[in-house]
Image (cartoon, rainbow, N blue to C red; front, side, top):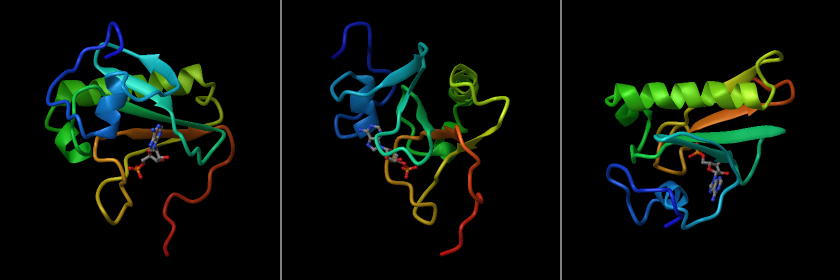
Length: 126
Ligand code: AMP
């Protein structure tokens, strides 16, 4: 485990993002608080693409909403990342894919912070 990082909540050894929190898998961290971590998406869909997660394991945004303090921390961290990345003036997108229809791939809740270019339509029908 990376020095200074501790497992919080129900950290799972099999959860990819819990393992990033634990420092077992590398990530390009751009922002960190006691309860949140933000790192660059490994497959960026925009010039700026950062994932913001609670350090505690919540599978999706529905579960996160049951922990209002953690939800507020994630929102504040996402806003701080947007400021830090220079996205606030031009605008950016903050997005939680949730469940199968939305194509959620990693079941440790994460907010996508996307920006740095005009973004396409939010809803794309197949
Ligand atoms: P979602 O479809 O909302 O679950 O998004 C999962 C995101 O996690 C995708 O955009 C992936 O590119 C990203 N991702 C997967 N593995 C990693 C990793 N090791 N480091 C950073 N981002 C990752």
